Length: 189
View (cartoon, rainbow, N blue to C red):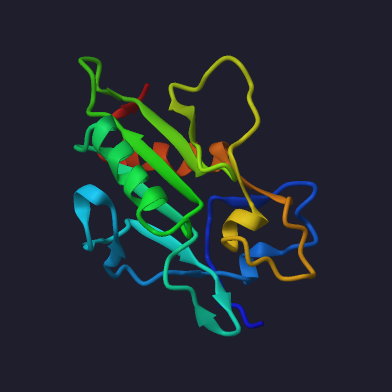
């Protein structure tokens, strides 16, 4: 099997993923339309904001395994529709959709942001977990993650632990997003 390289600044290794070295196994997908087939959007094409596609035997899969959708002007409902389109309209190939939502500034010029992970479970059920990026919550909760199995859309190379978790660092996201928010003349909530 051959793998492409990935530059993913929000990925970090959990204690169980240190053997996997996932940063050297993936490529960011070219931002090209992907055919989605749902009853209400039969054979429409959708372009992800960002996607990861596993390369098996040096060939990329037809669909990405992980998709990132972001939204500022899009409603939460629209982002969720986008997520469902990816999870339900790709024959199960897309395993995880990461949603990054920023809200317009409030009356104090502060911007709120959330990160959601939507994943398709083995039984077909879709679950969504949400983390507050801004404001920073008082309670500490583990960072969101993607498993190696999800990253490889179920075709995990034998040398990797399919259950190893790749943590998405909220601290790093807050640092990067906070800098962008400040450069735009706003404050973080």
